[in-house]
Image (cartoon, rainbow, N blue to C red; front, side, top):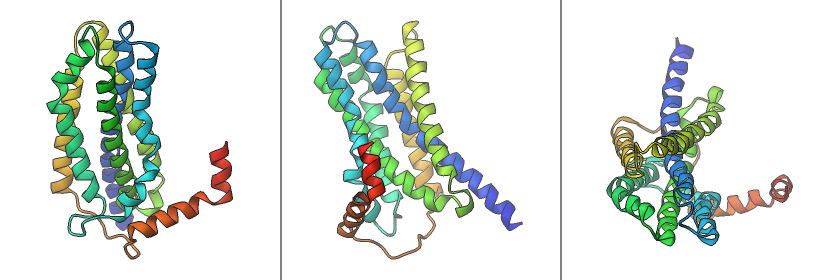
Amino acid sequence: MGEADDAAGDLRAAGLLLALYTLQGIPMGLSGAVPLLLAGRASYAEQALLSLASLPFSLKLLWAPLVDAAYVRRWGRRKTWLVPTQLLIGATMLLSRGRVDAWVAAAAPPVPRIAAYFAALYALCATQDVAVDGWALTLLSKRRAGWAATCNGVGQSLGYALSYVGFVALHARGRVSLAAPAGACGAGFLLTTAAVALGCRERAEAGAAVAPRAAYGRALAALRLPAVRRLALV
């Protein structure tokens, strides 16, 4: 009976993780589609600038220890960061969808603004990713902890594919502009955030709380490991 309950709980947790990771991939896919929309109206230098919008996701290690260590106890270690970041992503995409659509459709598109907009979304998605990765450690049982990586890979890829391939295909037929998927994604983030904030409880994590300074110390110690150095070199 206990094993069955554990499996059912893990399936629900995996569904939640898959939904969060899928939402995370949608802004990334829209960002990847923008250079196609600007083809012929943006120079090579401007296209390169757009490619830098994804850089915050590669640099999330710089603030990941802070996200892991600093939190409001009564809110929960992961929801302290997950709820605000998802609210910001949802509100930003929902409220600015018309303006971003106008930027992309302009004869002389303001590429630096577009790049800054998507870089901000990438930074928020990277922060959400750190929080969700940490939450997966307690959402899933130890027996099925490996599901977290599967949910991450499948969810991000699915979200990216839906927003990139799906949007480009519909846009090419003149059926949808950038505002529509951006607004839908923003609404999805807000609804999911409300469900997480009101309907999900965090399990207590084993071990004492770690101060941010100590968390950064542990991260630096991990970077000094020979295996990590070799991997970074590769």
